[in-house]
Picture: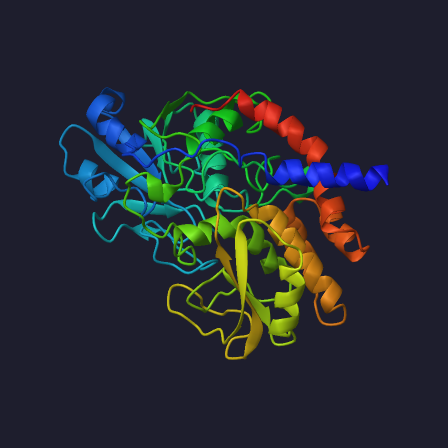
Amino acid sequence: MKRKIFLSIVLLLSINCFAQVQIPKARKVIVGADLLLSENFDLIKGKRLGIVTNHTALLDSKVHLVDTLFHRNDVKISVLFGPEHGIRGDNADGAKIEDGKDSKTGIPVYSLYGKINKPTKEMLKDVDVLIYDIQDVGARFYTFISTLFYTIQAAAENNIPVIVLDRPNPIGGLNVDGPILKQELTSFVGIAPIPIMHGMTVGELATMFNESGMIGKDLKANLTVIKMKSWERGLYFDKCNIHWLRPSPNIYYIVTAIIYPGTCLIEGTNASEGRGTEAPFQIIGAPYINSDTLYKAINNLKLKGVKFVATDFTPVEIANVASSPKYKGQLCHGIKINVTNRYNFNPVEFGISLISTLYNLYPKDFKFTASRFDKLSGDKSIREQIIAGKTPEEIISSWQKELNKFKDLRKKYLLY
């Protein structure tokens, strides 16, 4: 009985750890890219630049940082580096991206998504300063922060100063949750020992990667983070008065980003995460699922901040968005997820509850792709506990001790 009470308390605290924080009012946030030009240009004046970026590096003028710098005479862009989806963000998830030239400026572009994930010495031979400017979504398995990690590491290894232009964590900086990545599961969808929801900006992550020894015990880059103005931890992207662009093809809206840390785990199963529909990561299903049965089961969990609708859908190929979605052309049944209160909704715990429910409802049909799921969750014991019949509350409580240690470490590197 005492154990059940303890687990209930742990779950309650983890779900509501940020619900009592006063919700900040919307305001105009000024991102690091604008402040580089207006207040910190001396850092790059007369320099040869290497810029790690994509389509999200817009200034307040809605002109891209690269396009702006390209037309100046007091700085030179030697080379560009593109993450997953490419330098202009127009490649589907997982698509192979080749080196080439930027379509707008003709500047040489190296792909950091494929055989090479880190800028090499040869790539950096004409670079005096490295700049990183990419909009993140706030989840460990989003590959842009793996590119950030390798950028900082390459700067340290090649003794090149690196500037990170900070942008908001679009899902806020309050909720920190999920299992800590185990070292043996390190991959491009899990580059460092952090939880699924890190609750940090790219500037904060860069500082932690650089100063905590994560990029290498004896490595440390000459790192400058240009902080934002007016951002605070409770602000979601749609309260920042910044133009929204899809950070990647399947993150359509802010609500997609809010749900993503939980439903991306579905990628490690044989259920559809909604790719090939109008609402990827918001729609979950499969041909073997009964929509009404799943709706009733997940609704009975009485999860906070979220409602569900039973739905049917047929995934289709969408150019530059979903090239080969699960169950392409097949009728799937499942649920659509609607966030009703983002400050009460906990996506990681929802994801675990959803997957546990699917496993219990369809033990013969629902399958894990073990290696993929383990890399996404960061801890193979999560899958093992689901299979063993552990409750979501028990699974969630299993990562709290390590999560609390991370929260203590994280405090040292918060900039806002």
